[in-house]
Image 1 (cartoon, rainbow, N blue to C red):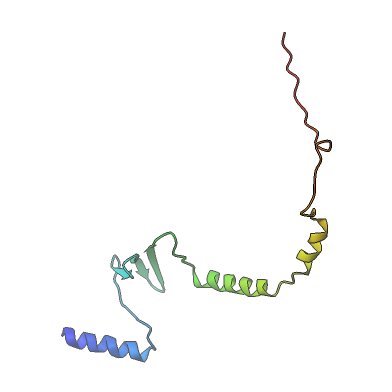
Image 2: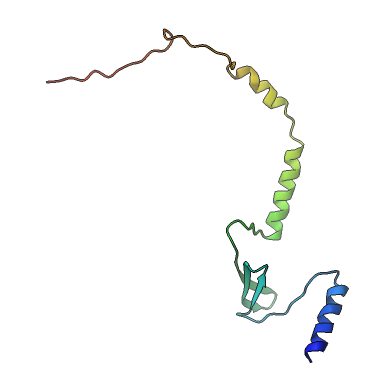
Length: 113
């Protein structure tokens, strides 16, 4: 029986172009790369609630958010640097010498009564 299931999974793997499809019941888990744990919390009608436990450095996005981020990144690649070049006129020169006469230091007077 186990051998037949294995063959079915292998065939399914090849059929769906290396996309792994699993069936899980509520409360069951999927472990990815020893560090990401996905738990099926609830499954009804057309919705499935899952919990993902992963290291903080792993970025997890819903697909629609991920696509928006990719679009925003594409737009930022086409930004002109002309605006940055014009800001250079407002920046002070690197070789500015400030004399001691130009620096004014104010001290608060302390009243002793």
